[in-house]
Length: 366
Image (cartoon, rainbow, N blue to C red; front, side, top):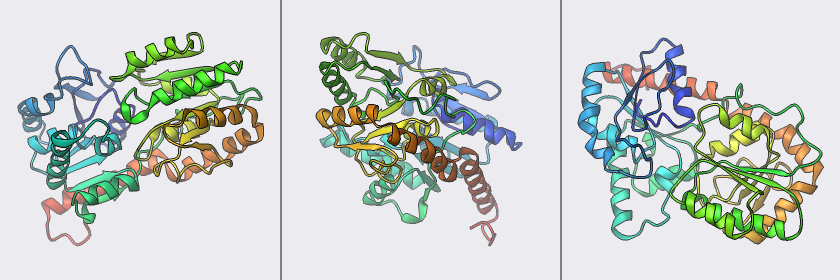
């Protein structure tokens, strides 16, 4: 695997494959070790996930040495335009990449040559990959627009570990005053709209607390916006969380917020749904398959803090809606996004791909 060890799903995948009896090495550009997994750091220290993007090119020789020593049957890269690029340059065997959202859809701030460069990287990786595991129809549509053959695309959403993400026994609470947003502080996720909506709610005199997790290039700017809005004491920034911390924080909240301008199938949303929170999310194509407005969640228009403030007031006041969401959302996630089931589907695909490469005439490997 070539994957960020700081991502919550990397240990899940690595441990799943190991539990099947597979030998697993995770090559990662972040220095975090994964307990019980052979983890090779190939990045640059001091680590900053938002800087030194050249590492996905310059560390390819290091990756090649790891691959030569390990002799894998297959390489699996998560995040198409970063880890996928390194894998495409370092490996010529069976190759699967996962496109999860911002690695394909994030066009914020990318225009002209920057956008052309990014799109050419995506095309290169997709040419080298045997299969592109996409997590939403929106990603499929974008890759098809770039000329990727439909036959290479396999849509299996990244999913949720239901043993980790489960509701607090007190859910749904009668009083709902705690919000949480688990998106990164990047332009695509528009945390600024959330902060402005919180300012509007505070101006009405309502009491609440909002937890903003993760880091990002805009984190310090958002911290200053909170100060400027007079929201100190109302908002908590956690920064990046260690594995296992997020489920506890979600269980402490009542309402999940995402103001994303675009997305794949949002694992953050699915985790909140599995934990019993009421989703209040931007009305984008990636969210509409998962949330039924005013039945299992609430929508608001992108970049509209006034509307977000309005629906957050409704979310706090509507006990019936929160109860309905609690009862239906976890069931929906269990039916379609159980991590164990979807990883087994992916593992079966890996086996067939490797067998097909070794035995091209194999009729059962298609």
